[in-house]
Length: 259
Image (cartoon, rainbow, N blue to C red; front, side, top):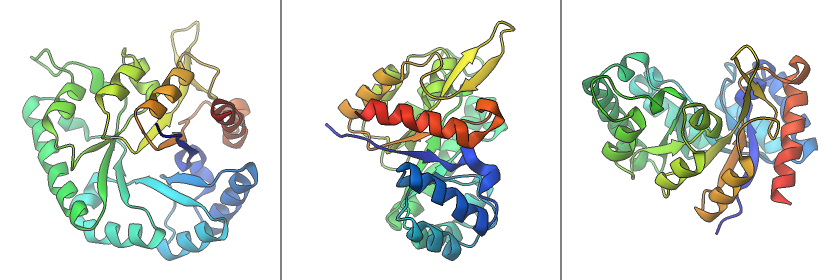
């Protein structure tokens, strides 16, 4: 049984990591909170060498990133070099392109692309990771299978890993613990996120522990399934429109889970 390392998905704070100076200030705030692990996503055009300088200053580890599919296809060597510099062995994709969701043929073309990427990454001691939203839990047109069913069944576990987002799984109509169990052995990083549905029927993200997702059950499942990292992520709808305040609230909740 693994006790997951808790950290912060920097996409939550993306407006505050666009320059090296702001990246430094943001990591300083996180470090003061007791955070020592992050996911890099949504960062500005900051050279990997400068990222490493700031990461090293705060003894901050990067467990995974999110980068675009176009760059994975056209400059994978550059991405590998940058990941080696910042000491990260996991390259993540935030979502599949829209056309891959429209048919079985398009989805399988996407799977073939990621297999080629995963094979190259494996040769460099790295792994490919895919982050879900809710659309993966919809049925493929003309089939009785969801996109996630196909991803789980038709991707190579050695080449295609998952970054399960528990709020998107729940919003997609599934039990996150059930999906985490199906992904056993294929998950390095889980995203903890929470949400409500207001009286107008609108989905709103909230700080961890304030919404509909049973995060305690998800945490216990992560431990039992030996999933090593949990990152807090909140796309928007932050407390008082302040992503740092929402991060502090959510970090306190995560620490309580660990306790």
